[in-house]
Length: 195
Image (cartoon, rainbow, N blue to C red; front, top):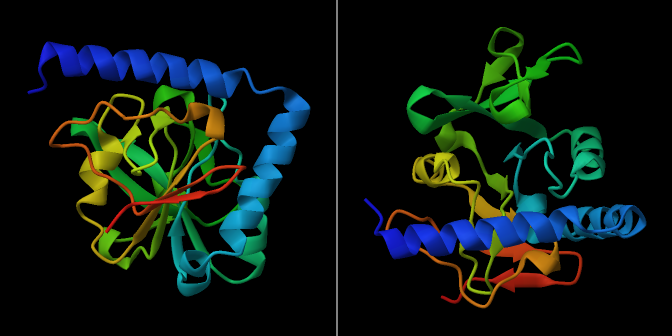
């Protein structure tokens, strides 16, 4: 159980990060999204991966639609998260355009009966959204802990956080159950976790 000070600091960073990403002007957001997608498509982690978990953008998150289009054309397997009871998560590959519905938290989510479940150990690249992040590749998520639980099940995946640089903080409020990522990509640059 987190102590009250850590919970408070996370909540403060979460609110500030969400406000920052939502304040990005539309033209700058489109340009930033394109640049982030280009960075991802040029990365070694993308080239090495066949099976990728990404997300459908919500609440001002970086839009990865252009990345998804190019990855799909390249023959990659793309799957998306679905929230489950107990703050667990599944990775589902939608099998057609009618494989989507509004899921938990009003996020576009694959329909299980029209999708294929991908075992966590089969994932080779996971793109993770956040509210805030720091240069050491720690993140503050939306508070549910879904990704932190799920990432512990994915031993073969490179993990890349995706954010706008305005969401960066000097040091994320992080507890023992918070899972750090391998790297972060923004419209300005890559950040890599120190070995």
